[in-house]
Image (cartoon, rainbow, N blue to C red; front, side, top):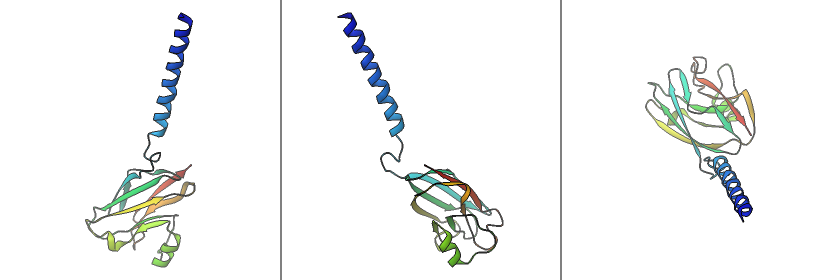
Length: 145
């Protein structure tokens, strides 16, 4: 009888450890398909993001606030140098918020889910209004599986 109680105790302990491990792994927002909040602040001439490491398949809810005194835009796209036209930005960007929605003091949101991996340097958060990108308004991001 003592041997069966020891086996039962061991089995219960093992089940508890596995359950705790599964809860820890499955407790993220992506497991419940709820979007992960990303806070982005735009100023002259800087972008600050609460997250720069993203995961494929996880929905993200970007809340972008322009704390600057001039309009900005927000783009998720490959790095680009030189002045780009609106059409070029549209073609290159995975997603974005235009300057008409991000005037001084404005806040806008964007929901986006990455569908593939991107190594460091392959994507960034950026503002491509004249002089802004060159002034430092870009931050590299990484997207992994």
